[in-house]
Length: 231
Image (tube, rainbow, N blue to C red; front, side, top):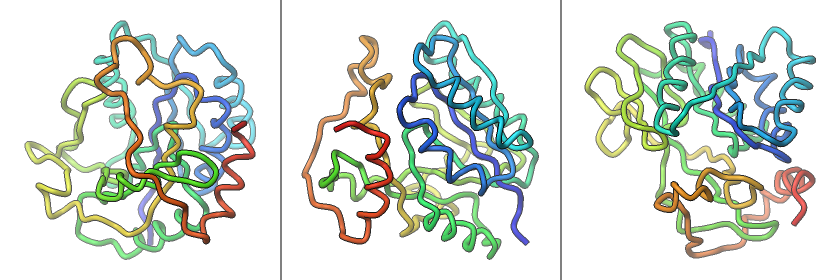
């Protein structure tokens, strides 16, 4: 039997990707917790409300009006505090796209109930319709973790990290957070808006590294992605 699954997302201006990001997630999770910035000035909220009208029992929309970005760590913690213990949390950024097949792989893994605290995964860092940033091949991020006693966020957003007590849930330092071969798509390069373009966030800007063509088997999902993006 698989434990409950919640997804957690902070979002501001997510268009035109909002529905793309959530359309596969909503049938998969038990609850989808989304906190939108009151500074959002595109159609993100309308898209979220459209999704909520279909998934009334799953999608929970909250708002935030933090005065400084660092306070978003407390917003993340609020979502975690609203999540029952012994629940798997999908750390879903607003530019993470998971295909149905990738989610099926994760569900099959979670059914095995391995004795771990979380899983780290490596994304396809999407550049355009034909290329991705291959230099990201060794970057693994905590995307799934169990909400257990002692789980909390520490640090100022966007450098906040997940801890279990004093233990950082980071694969290089913690054997209870193994790496997986399952991959997802990271769409930060093709978003219209990103916090990385804000004046205060210059240190977080990402340069494109070594580019490579996608494996042929990804073309179906890339076609779906770029239906939402004018490139």
